Image 1 (cartoon, helix red, strand yellow):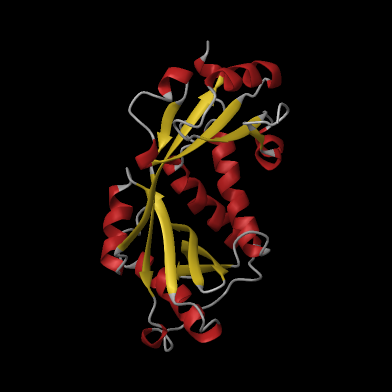
Image 2: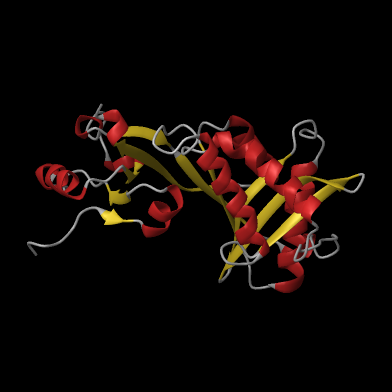
Amino acid sequence: MKNYKIIELLKWDSDFFGIKVGKIQLVRGNFEKSKFVDEQNEEHYDLIYGFSSADKTSNGFWELLGFHLADCPVTVSMKFDLTKYKNLEYECCTGLSKNDVKACYEIAEMIAPVSRFYREPTIGRELTKKMYRKWIDTALDGSFSDYLFVERVERKIVGIHAIKTDNNVGIFTLTGVRDGFTGQGMGRRLWGQSFSYWANNTPKVNLIRSRFSINNIPSFNFHIAMGFNIVESVNHIYHYSKRHDN
């Protein structure tokens, strides 16, 4: 028991961002402050993510350790009635032209500012944009998201939407609409494509799940309008970085 670690090394994040990144589950009353301080001093993490259920922390507890609140994501879901969507058209993108991929990258970069990483000085804007471009790559090759759907205007991609399926649950992983085309129903059409895909190919899906930042009011309103009516969880994500020690 003496050698257990409370900070978990995140290899993918560390390799991608070029800094040492760790993760910790913040549970008040079951957390050794002194061990965290000693471990951080010994391991020299540049950035640590702290995950905590909203109802398990008290105000100021983690801030005293040097953490700052980076985001408050809400996970919502809704029951899925596949009979409503069988007749909608959809297209899973498996091969896109270079111009199409570039358009997807541009949209991904446009929505990157909503990310907690975009506001994190240890990572910064350019690395966050790179991560969102990677999100497109992993949707096209199926290594993270399963599929990518797009909406076009005059043959140019103006909307992107990525999904994955986990047993009977359909999950939205990324949605974005190019500036100048919001408020025109693009989001509904993108999500409609994924609904139709699930209805026609994975009939076992009976629940749709999505996550967004509680600070993203347009996204909150959109989810309500689309029928999401179950709040599954509200979490706090904290960041601890060397930059805040200086």
